[in-house]
Amino acid sequence: MSTVELKEKLIEKIKNTDNEMILVEAFRLLDIDTFDLDVYRFSKEERNEVNASRFQISNGQYLTNEVANEEIEQWLNK
Image (cartoon, rainbow, N blue to C red; front, side, top):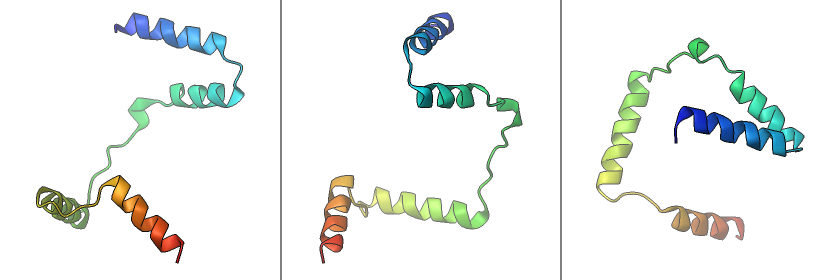
C-alpha cells in the first residue's frame, strides 16, 4: 500500500467514526513529533539480561503464553 493510499484510508476511517476515544488517540499519535523522540539506550546490565534471556529461549527455557496463563490461573485459584 502506498503512502497516498494509506493516507486516504486513514482519512476515510476518521470521517466515518464518531468514537471520541479513537479520535483523541489518533490525534495524540499524529501529534507526536518523531524528531523529539530519543533513542533508548540499554545499560550494560539490561544488555546482559536481554542476552541471558535470548540464551534461555534458544535452549527452550521458556513458557508459551498458554502455559503461563494456565499457571497464573492455578496460582490465583489457590
